[in-house]
Length: 295
Image (cartoon, helix red, strand yellow):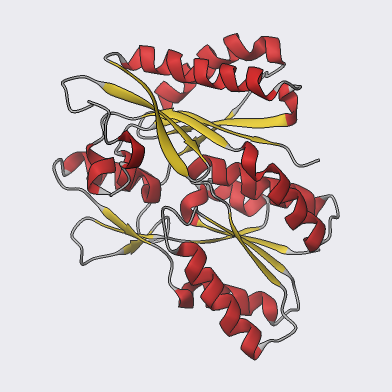
């Protein structure tokens, strides 16, 4: 193995995918009461988190990033085996995960000066970060050295996008992630936003009163991006991230594949958005993650 791939749990990859690709995942913490913080996918499963969110309407959960010690414990395991590491973290604009990982790296290097640890601010979140992590695995499995892999990952980072919609903006407001959506009049009854995530931030991309129209419009955003890149869209990985409704994700995939057939897209994976991100999006996020494949 040329290097070990590590990510914080914002990557929203299923446990089976993590296992199949030998990815070490360091969990975020989530809480509904500011006191009892539970590790994502360890102390509370994603499905249970969504159920609790729906049961406790009006209660807005919070998240906390992995600690320096959490990262240190994982880094030390591989440092002892002289295995280089690439650690991919959620965008620094959303969390202190990258800083905690960097602090842990510096502590490891004091004790294990020959350790090789590359900590990457992905500038991504959720399923887009997941695609990025899988690209790191693909480079590793194709025999790339760690320096070559980091260079390739840096090259494709600017191509990452998420086009998505949510039920409303209340969770974004309470989570402090409203950002450039602050001027969007989504507090009106039944108004739902379309949102583009790029360069580590969220940007408004329209509003609609109908969930179905929102789904159609985020497909249009994806198609527009396919046109914008001006190259074979088979050079890009596309997936769907969904919240509490798998059936809705299947419907979105069928709608999207019909429009994207002309671009050679024949399938896309469905990944459930984890509790770390759902803290900010609420129970009904739905959209696409897309990033260029590493060559």
